[in-house]
Amino acid sequence: MGAQKLIHNVNRLEGLLNIPGDKSISHRSVMFGAIANGTTTVSNFLKGEDCLSTIRCFRELGVEIEETDYTITIHGRGWDHLREPINLLNVGNSGTTIRLMLGLLAGRTFHSTFIGDDSIAKRPMRRVINPLREMGARIDGRSNGEYTPLSLRGGGLKSITYQMPVASAQVKSALLFAGLQAEGKTKIIESAKTRDHTERMIRHFGGDIYIDDLSIIVEGSQRLFGRHVDVPGDISSAAFFLVAGAVVPESHITLNRVGLNPTRKGIVEVLEKMGANINISSYNEESFEPVGDIIIQTSNLKGTVIEGELIPRLIDEIPIIALLATQAEGQTIIRDAEELKVKETNRIDTVVKELSKLGADIVATKDGMIINGPTKLHGSKVSSHGDHRIGMMLAIASLICEEPVELENAEAVAVSYPEFFSDLSQLIK
Ligand code: S3P
Image (tube, rainbow, N blue to C red; front, side, top):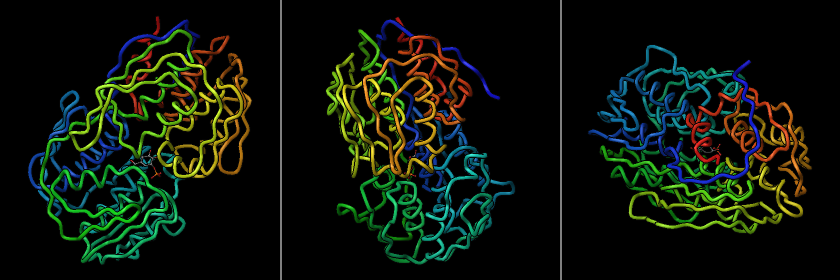
């Protein structure tokens, strides 16, 4: 069993935080840096376990990557200098690493094998592998390629037109990496708009991409060039403190330089819709990703409905939104979120199970959950189930529980936010 933490309630939260770098953008900065020609420097890189897995995999492919505190330097030498790995590519807990790298390596003629942890072994991969096979990559693995270990031999890709059956930025990004290496133009049609960091980065690294609403076209045989990437703070990490600031009495928190990409900021829209006392200042969209400071204060909240196109724009924030809803007046309904079942854990089950232990009025539905509030939460023994976002949600819940909460497997937070507990303690007054 992992680390246990006893967390007590607090009187108020106050202060200012610099939120660590965005996980999705940090992964992509290594990937684009590796396939580009020339040096890429990345500042505010997220040194969470997931992004370190991406670095480890690219080192196995012969890419030179230097690390200093929060900056990394990638010495890219173009697609053709990636070399056949001698060792297994171990992605740890990271779905983004494996799914995006499958697309990236689908155009390389060498052999590679991916493995990961127990959670990765349960996550569906055919959503990426089916279209990559259609493009010509040879991929095999457990259950006809649905699960790890997965072996890949790529090369000779032809372009396709692909209507995506699920709204997934990981699938879209894998196909964009493959499309950049394929013969001709690859067209991807999304079922709903998902995070567009890969599209933005193709442009940032000097590539061409055409976007028309849900359709994306990328041409093959593109050369990319090393660039500087300044990673914004991760809005998915900021979300825990946004909710904490809204629900803990007499709180006032400022979060600096958070990424405010429209495809990611569903959490801000939900907080506004629920009546939260939230403000954005210093908004700036001069860089390839928009950023701003977010100020949150204790709020009177009301229930809401979260569904449809909003879901992909806040998919990773649903666990912490469920906690927020327990403190809102009335009912909150979350639907169209079946994708939660195939995240690091089945997040419909783990959220409902763990928040119920703390006294929340919450039930699971086939594609989401229904929460009635407000409820007073009480102490209990809870577990992250090894899922970083469940661990952080439960830690924030503990701040408003009447008795102390014993959180098992608290160390899981290091996947996306190694400094989470020290940042939280800075705010406790
Ligand atoms: C991510 C996409 C999302 C998200 C994950 C990161 C990305 O996954 O949940 O945490 O960086 O592209 P899906 O594409 O499976 O929805």
